[in-house]
Image 1 (cartoon, rainbow, N blue to C red):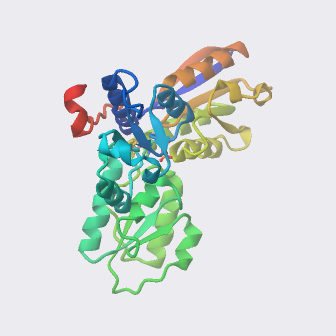
Image 2: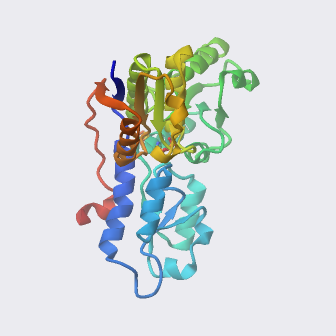
Length: 326
Ligand code: 2E6
Ligand code: F3S
């Protein structure tokens, strides 16, 4: 039988990533090359999305990536050089610092992350304590917890529920990071409901449509494959979750491997493999998947099929400062 590739669909860019990259792209296009004053056309706080190739590509076109706002010189602030906040969002402290410095901020925070920020503010106003399932230190979690550090209690796993102490008179609500594993989160929620039966869930899950759709599709593909390749960077939460979900669905039949690009694939992974599944995280340009498919074809995987679970049609408009320019 011919060796084959099964592509998962949906995979790759989500609406929030597309918007964030287009934000930086639009600024770079409008700038038409380097400025006369020697300053860069745009600063970006943190990786615009968690993908090495995306960041390298935008940097090669002149975008300057910084970890913190204090790396941006005062002369750039005075000259009005735009500063883009990444798709993962920022804490109010970062926004305040930008205001203090008079920086020309363009906020590329995904609207679905922004929604969680607003939920925190609303529930705190209403007197709730918030249990937030997320990854300690991840940009998105840092931003959300920063909205109200004293009322947002971050936990990563079900075992951490043991460390929470709330009395039954405490109003409790659960919020989560947008890119968690749907199945793992269900386990944490079950444990929370066992300990705190009165905990309220938000009206709709904070795990975003793109995360859950990609996990659903990767599961179906993995059930039909002997091995999986998931394209995405090591610091991309949704890509790593996708790899874990694929591994779980493969079970003893094989392994799921995360790679940044085709060059990271080890041909030995495919010894004895008849069907390899391929997917990619929400921050991954599809040309990287094309590269993976081409390399697999060279290794003898000549047939290419697709498994599609749902057709996405989500789109977010650009930040208001840029709408006229696109
Ligand atoms: C913003 C929020 C959620 O690491 P993570 O999966 O959060 O981020 P990316 O940049 O890999 O994916 C898109 C994204 C942006 N997801
Ligand atoms: Fe937004 Fe979800 Fe993408 S939160 S950036 S739509 S992975």
